[in-house]
Image 1 (cartoon, rainbow, N blue to C red):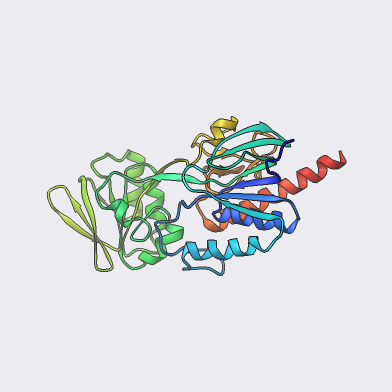
Image 2 (image 1 turned 120 degrees about the horizontal axis):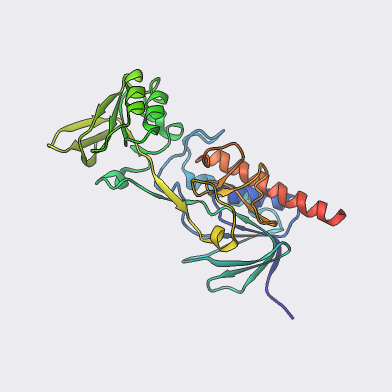
Length: 310
């Protein structure tokens, strides 16, 4: 007799996407296990922004409140794991098996992935130490905090033109730091049209000073900034997309439909790891991730209901 635990849905990840999914599933009385770790993409930042009703709140505070809400539903259970957590997922719709380090195998009819992504920061001394407030990758999340100051934009890829244009109403000055790389002709022209300054020297260091940053360029030139925007490289934080053979977009995100369904029936994805229709990349936003978690959970419920009457 198989005594291992069985659930309608297993949610992997307890950030905003996973927690909202859990609450939605709990309200619909679906037996749900949320498997969490203690690692979150927005750990480096002390405050999140651009979230309805929670602007400026610490991310951990939101997660704590959201978990309390989800735990109020009898059908929701949490499994907090240290180390690897879930190590492997196999199976198919109605018969998934999840191997969890140090725990019995868990079985689920459906799996909702909310495992997020892992950022790799530019290899510039001081960037990692200041990432999350004075160094950021999202102007929607942190740009307002740099208002009225000189803002740096690190990089030479085509995106720096659009970034400089977006920051025009916010920043007093905008300085693109190419870090020794060359701008292509179109990007250089775009920056000229926005009035941004371009400095091509290698950036040798970034340090916090007072309420802002000081950037050191090759030759020991120093530049005071109110904030620095950088582009991160990212990859899936967990191996499940590869294990399950899920379709990935050109940028490495799990491809989902408008309801979070992946290319494998019974597997759903939400949050920063997933890319919906019409989007060039995942939307790195706590609010968008929570919304995606609700949609994916609703799809789990709806799909199961339709299957029963088919």
